[in-house]
Image (cartoon, rainbow, N blue to C red; front, side, top):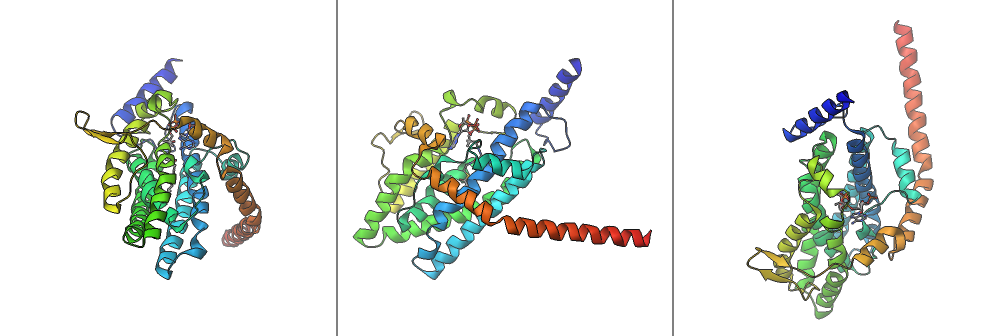
Length: 319
Ligand code: 3HC
C-alpha cells in the first residue's frame, strides 16, 4: 500500500511541477481511465462533427466556399485520427473505441445532433461551434498528458481557420439581402444555446471537473470557459448586427463579465442521452460508413502483412 501512495505522490508532484506525463510513465488507473474517456469522446466528436457540415459540401454557394468547407471537413477527420492515436497510447484499441461509439456506450458532443437547415448554419458552426471548440481546446494544449497536449497544438491552429472562414460567411450574409440577414439571425437563434452546452454541465453538476483540474487535464472549469466564450461572442455578434437570443444577456460591471440566462439543462441531457433531433441519423450514418469502409481497412491490413512477410524473408536471407 505504501508503494502506491508514494507512486501517487510522485505522480501528482510531477504534474504540479508542470512536467508532462508520458505513455510509459506510471499513472493512477483513474487518470488513465478519464483520459481514455475524454480523448476518445473528443475524437468521436470530431468524426461525427463532419456529418452536419458534409451535408452542405454539394450545396455551397460558390467554388471558394466549397473549397473552404471541404478543407474544414477533411481537417476534422484528421483531428479525429490524431485524437484516436493519442488515445491508443493509453493502451486501448481503436476498434474498441469505435465500437463504443456505435453501440452508444461512448458520447460525442451534443452539438452535432442538431440539423444544418440553411447555408447560414455552416457559417454559424464555424463562428460558434468551432469558436467554442477553440476556447476549450487551447487550454488542452497545456494538458498534463503529453500526447493529448501535443495533438491539440496542431488541432488549434486548424480550428482558427475553421472559425475565421465561418465568421467570414456570416459577415457576407450580414451585408446581404434582407432574406440573407433573416437566414443569418435564424441560424444564430438555433445554434446559440446548444453552443453554450458544448462546455458541459455547470461545475456544480460536473462529476469530473474537480479531479480533472487537480490532474491538470482541465486548466479551466466548464463555467469559466463558457463565461469567456460568452464575453467574446457578444462583441462579435454586434459586428454581424445579429441579436443573441438571450434577454438576460447584459454586461455586469461588478463581475467584469456578461450575465446570461439559464441553459435548458433538460434539453442538454435529453440530447446527451440520445434523444436529440439527429442522434439516430448521426450514429446510423457512422455505422454505415464504417461497414462500407471495411474493404479499405482490410486492404491496408493485407498490404501491411505482405510488407511484414517481405521484410522477414529479406532479413532471413541476409542472416
Ligand atoms: N455533449 C455530450 N456529452 C457531454 C457534453 C456535451 N456537450 N458535456 C459534457 N458531457 C458529458 C461528459 O462526457 C460526462 O459524461 P461521461 O462521464 O459519460 O463522459 C458528463 O457529461 C459530465 O460532464 P463533465 O463536465 O463532468 O465531463 P468532462 O470533465 O469530461 O467535461 C468536456 C466535458 C468539457 C466536453 C470535456 O470532456 C472536454 O473538454 N473534452 C474535450 C473537448 C471536446 O470533446 N469537445 C467536443 C467538441 S469537439 C469539436 O467541437 C470539434 C470541432 O472541430 C468542431
